[in-house]
Image 1 (cartoon, one colour):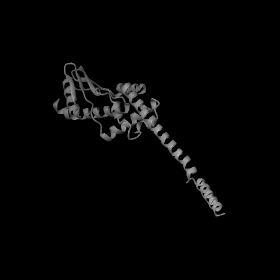
Image 2 (image 1 turned 180 degrees about the vertical axis):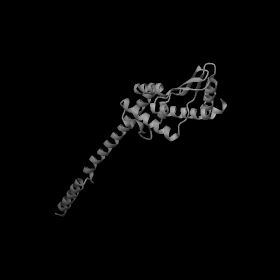
Image 3 (image 1 turned 90 degrees about the vertical axis):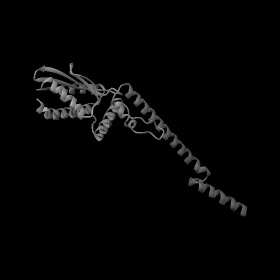
Image 4 (image 1 turned 120 degrees about the horizontal axis):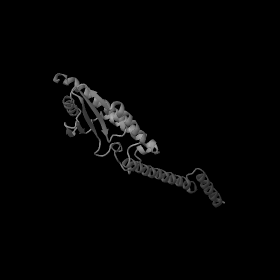
Length: 223
């Protein structure tokens, strides 16, 4: 009789334990669920990393967008050309001084042709970073990538400077072309090469032309 009672107690305890999810029969489903969740998380991370790599490859292949190109063309026509009521030599010298003030590195300078090329001026770091984030978000959306490609997918994700890809490697710069209209008038063309995001180009136009105006004012005494 005692043996039967003991057996009943053991069976009841096992059933109770199984129903509570704590015993041998209840622990297996929980373990499987955890394993499946872990596997799904790993798959999501891998898919995210692959999407980021495709995004990187697309940007390296062609960092420009047709809509951006059209906007830059309109901008160049609207604000890229200016005429100064000053002689050619005075304008040329003022442009060289302006570039030095902006911290640009002059790569080519030909007074005879009125042609100057240099590195682009630097925008304030916070402004530059904000523009890069805007550009990346627009690019990802235009190419059909999810916003998640802009975020790291985990400790084993490939880290790359996506912002730097928006500027062509070694090709970003500005060009100044000056043409003598007459003895007291000079036309200046300002263009940016290798900078694709229109809002960044717009800010660069503002920065350079603002500094040119300041320099022209300072150079009045030399006329």
